[in-house]
Image (cartoon, rainbow, N blue to C red; front, side):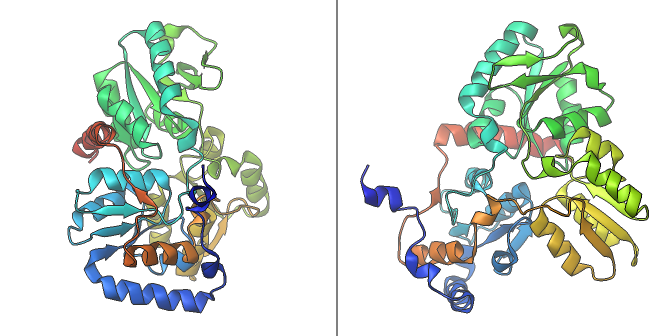
Length: 366
């Protein structure tokens, strides 16, 4: 491979030499020039330097839906990570082009389940359980995994609608394969009354089922994946806070471990966390177990409340942080110059099957 091909996706040096103010002026000018032809969705976990230019801020599915509904937008510059831009491309029409400012912005959780591992797992699990399973995938997964669930009668879920989708899945089949986040799957199933000892774990590295009981008791097979951010909130974080600040309410995301969720005062999706704190009484104190860029933004937005991270040593999501002001400007100037860099385009068959999975969710998750 030629050197130019290897470096094609790297940020040109000229952007590293610009000041923040220079970049902000140029981004604003491009937004003004392109007008309604440009739409910039920004995920909650993005840096403030990027969020300030977002036309909509939200979670991944919400932003993909808003992008698809915005028929005037020809250029959708998705400030998030790769699987989010894929979902936007799946839902938008052929006249819209989705860009990701930095192609290195992936998701460690989504990367923990590739299609080859998943197909092997499905074959092995069918030998164990027969035609008794339905696959569910968190939207934090690749288009290929969404397509897998689509063609096998399954669906996507979000952290907001996981309960209703797991209920639906159990109406379809007696067992669920839930991927790629074991913690969201475990927490959701437990809340719906499935005992922990009726949940097995599929290890995609060893291609083995981790379970000590009778296979007949298995109701949920959890993929051995996790969010690298939310796994860093621990029981010791909660115990320390309970000891030093018993007045503080603890709210966490259901991507956290089961034991962390169990010891917290409340848990829910990103939107639920934002809404709960917004509706809380002035003067209340909160420790939040989710991504640090969002926690800092919540702190800024609610000076009438005391808000802190559950883990004081927490770092922002590293892959989300790859989208910065310089990459946003580079992406916009590439569009202005008629370039084709950093376009996210899901192969047609994969997109069709993935849309089946998304449509099943959207039809039922009310």
